[in-house]
Length: 291
Image 1: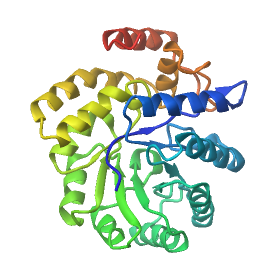
Image 2 (image 1 turned 90 degrees about the vertical axis):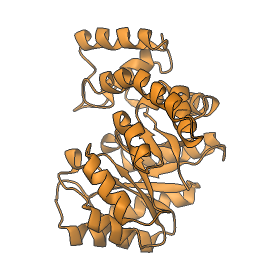
Image 3 (image 1 turned 45 degrees about the horizontal axis):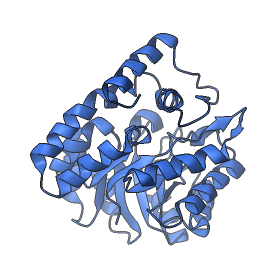
């Protein structure tokens, strides 16, 4: 259902407020450059510091601006099950094609608690759901056996795997049905994951390099593996430099350098990229032909 290069889009700010015109510009830039889908209100979209009203507004804008041209998968996760249901219900009402739901964070539920959390949301809101497994941020791993259980629920259709572990990825692919979509949550693992049977990436890098990331996935799925491999290794330094500090501070700095957003503004407790790292980032953007 969802495959290829799907961008986890940033939320641009201007003087503390959502830059709505800037967000619409980014959506059009992505679609014009071959992106296969858009995820608003993910980690890269700074969802932890958006109010509920802002969160819903960002989803509304992205759905409206996309206008059916590519799928929209709205971030709707929470460590509160009832709050996750509310955010997911809004995603459906707004017209999103799916929801991306992070594992409950901070309260560190058991595997059974994780299962019941997602089961409850899936049964409450009839929308395709992609699980989001990122233990480095949540403090808990959705184990492959739990993902396999969840894959039996009709509207849980895939997982974004951001463990950084090929063992986790291959274990998930091996135990889940063939029609269950596994997407990389780490840009640097996009090509290896597809070689193992994954279907693409929910990408940070696509914010600045949508066409190269989309081409990488397209070439792979066309069976042009050597060309895809070369694309991957060309993009790899960019995949690394864009995580030189906490995401999304480097990607916002890069977009500002490219004049794609008016400001690299992030919300506290995040702060802008240091000047020394900004210069390293600028150098790589030039090497990639993005500046």
